[in-house]
Amino acid sequence: MVQKVSISKIISNPDNPRFIKDYKFKKLVKSVRRFPQMLKLRPIVVNKEWVVLGGNMRLKACIDAGLKEVWILQADELTEDQEKEFVIKDNVGFGEWDWDVLGNDWEQQELEDWGLDGFPFEKEDEEEEKYTRKIEAPTYKPNKNKPKIKDLYDDSKYQELINNINKSNISEEEKQLLITTAQRHIVFDYSKIADYYAHSNKDVQTLMEDSALIIIDFKKAIEN
Image 1 (cartoon, rainbow, N blue to C red):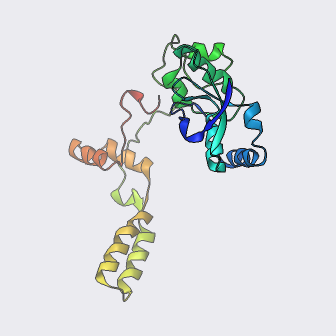
Image 2: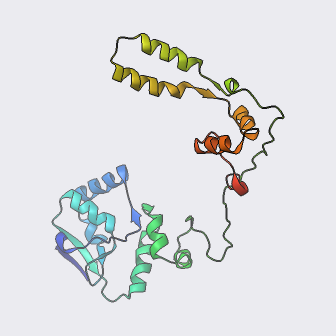
Image 3: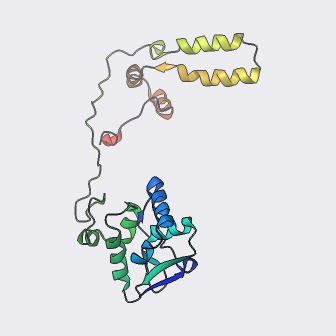
């Protein structure tokens, strides 16, 4: 039976998977203010504990609109499974889905049976792939000759900045800050760095890896 109750008596459903945001929600609040009688024609549905099953966003809009009482329909005869099914079916076609809530609290097959499709869940019976965005990366082949260190990077812009900083009249603390940040303007030639790495001893290679100048694609993990 439809009845009018204090809005404070109704409990918002914390697991509601549907939401309306931004301007659409503002339109709903405006609609409630202009035509509150519609709430009697489409009452908020609650269970026996007064938790919302249908109309969670309408309840929120009523609160924002400043209503003290709302029309509700108490569905106290539903089982827990029926309540979950009602929540989905009542919301199909309105607002936006919270996919995390759906994925955690509902079974995919049930959602499909109740008319919800287009959700980004993986089928449980499908073989899970180890990688989902495989790319074809070229295999690196080092050149025969080891490049000179001076050819691995271009620091001309960096040196120009350092020269201007040192000639300035700012404090030593400020100079140190700018000198440190000026290193961002050093341009590295990573293909030549890779060649240098290939012809270096183990100690140099390890330090280059630690500095992230070189990233080794073990077992093609990055490629895959």
